Image (cartoon, rainbow, N blue to C red; front, side, top):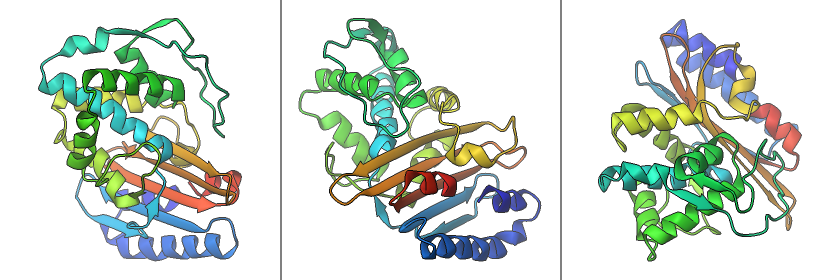
Length: 267
């Protein structure tokens, strides 16, 4: 995918040819059984043109939702003028459960160790640590026992009509809009938008979007994975902003299939 996308920085007129090449690539991967469904959304952040293929298909967001949870904390701190929230220290009191992630985090938080909200936000996004995310969700519940805070975030982002930890779906185009809001500072103010994108740029997931890029290109992204034991279906997604010199762009790829290795190559 990235070999094709780099052409855009050279010639904007290549969009039509690019889309044909991507459609051909996606059809080939599905026909060969490497994936069952592939959705893609691209936006040129310099000039504005967009490109979508199956971009309204629904996927299980899985760990992509961690970005929304962190956004909720940032937004609450901003709207209530409570920057000290990020220095609040929290402890994980539960016994850590077995981590079933196909792509496990490099680090996880430890029981009875204090972490600031800022540290938890970083670990949630950089390592996709489920335990850090769980503790952040507990803190959001403490701030708002009725759960209106996080539901309002989902509604205002426009990616989900209702909020449920266990039953959600999102389109590629819908989720990609979060990164556009961060890039344009239209959901958070400029300081918090840039801070959050800075955290995402330190993501430890080196496959997916990052794998096809030259060294030194900054990427602010979030990946998500889900394995359904009942159907053996796997889903793997990666979405973010690629800060390609002079021409940053947004790319979101979501996939369904039976084999994570195949999906990882596609992403």
